[in-house]
Image 1 (spheres, rainbow, N blue to C red):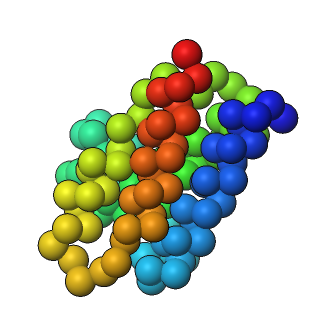
Image 2: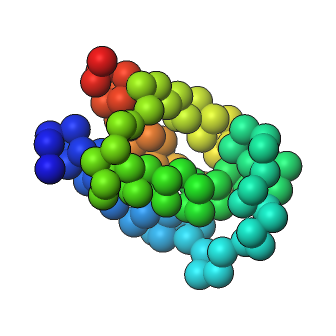
Amino acid sequence: MSTIYREVNDVLQALEQDLKTLGLWEVEAPPAEHLASQQPFCIDTLTFSQWLQFVFLNRMQALVDEQLPLPAQCGIAPMAEEYFKPMALDASVLIQRLETIDRVLSQQL
């Protein structure tokens, strides 16, 4: 596994743990129709934390596992900042991990 895939894999594993630590990890997946939303971040059918768990983590892990081309840009940390801002939840570590993914993916070019 090349360095970028290893680095992204490590951050994805840490993101999963962060979601669990924050109490945002869900045992059951939302209905399939919610996951099939065409809106960015499935904003019309999922919370941002659900999107991270059931869409982002799953898709990124599949790309890493198969060593398929990774997105050239990500930019999800700003969305996380906005989502978590009004919550009484310290999501700073999770946001930093998303910033890492954003940075790593943009540097792969």
